Image 1 (cartoon, rainbow, N blue to C red):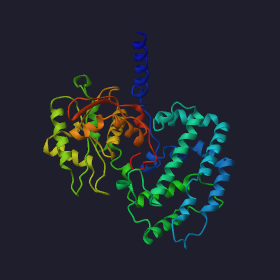
Image 2 (cartoon, rainbow, N blue to C red):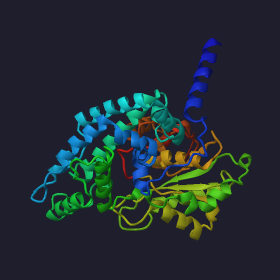
Image 3 (cartoon, rainbow, N blue to C red):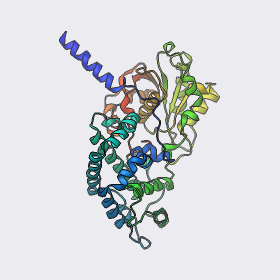
Image 4 (spheres, helix red, strand yellow):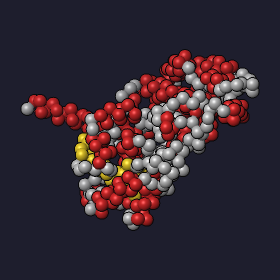
Length: 418
């Protein structure tokens, strides 16, 4: 009996921590005007947009010294450069990162009220950084900024130096980075954006690096993170409005999730994706859930103009006459792991009932992969957490699960779908 009570207690603790916490629905995200930046580097956007924090950082002697040293490196003449090696100076070295962390600790200790306000009013309620929720304020702040700097470095490595990203077949540079044209283009942007400002103390310590990183993404046509946003005012507007009127007790599931399956050739929609859609319509028409969520980004082939979610939405509306108010689009996921993670994000952000199950409808092969215990390892390896609780296979092509709160964490080392 004691063992049973202990197991039940552990279960309650786990379920409370992973999915029963409420997301603050009235939290309003601060905007820089660049959604790619805001999604990937929200902490840096906050530093820029919160005047009290910005002034503290600008007046910090420790950060001023850092900026002076960094600008000295960035002021070199690159016109005769035969490579992109000068980009190393704008990245954050291990020494730079340690210096930033130390300086942050210093300004935090001297300006506790301002930083605690930033953390309690923005960092924690945004849920973008919930992987560090258990940490004290000072540790959370330093950890979040450290991750942002690693994220900036990642952009330089992949889109500046052409190193392989997490998924090199679909997220690599769009140019031949060894070509003279690309080297000249990057050099022009480097100079045009005013990165080399020796002695300039009017910029925050990260702004030259952030600005150039955004340009590298832009010239590589890597704006995927911002495409179709804000969805609740656009592609998902009718469904979002319908969601507020839904009688949830009438349905077993919150939503039917259909993961995309990218076409191998230059076609709009793969045959396998069409089969998944047909199965999802059968489940929708049987009344299992009030919505179908289609999930998939611009994935295959490389730099495809077709978005899986958009094309699946068209198929549902034109072939099956599913009303737009019953279709929720998730157009950013590029993998099975992020199909689930991103679905969870929409469920939490849109205000679905906490703890209500999601039904995944797919094909036999993918269903078997998701149900395989090895999928847990893959999730941890690719996205840093397991995006489901109480996963259960209900048929050869269906699985059900409860979404989890850790899915709201934004990973800046995956800039196309953080």
